[in-house]
Image 1 (cartoon, helix red, strand yellow):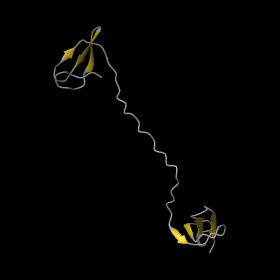
Image 2 (cartoon, rainbow, N blue to C red; image 1 turned 135 degrees about the vertical axis):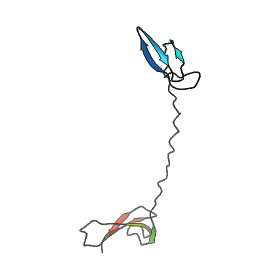
Image 3 (cartoon, rainbow, N blue to C red; image 1 turned 45 degrees about the vertical axis):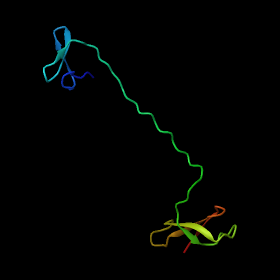
Image 4 (tube, rainbow, N blue to C red; image 1 turned 90 degrees about the horizontal axis):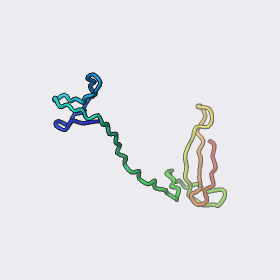
Length: 103
């Protein structure tokens, strides 16, 4: 794109016979037919890698059947028909063992 040196507007090509003129709405004209294309690229930020997996679940006092730890994460999910109660899932804070409890 070419821009007008007077007002800064974008110049538009206008063909007059065999030559191409670049004209602006302010009246500026030029026969300089060079078109320069440029692009600004912002450098990408590095992706931060987190080694430790952070659990974002509530903690309850439920004993792990594998290691006996008293604290567990929990969540619920509807795994059966809508007229039946939700299934509660637990994950041990210490060993990571996962189990479920049906009501």
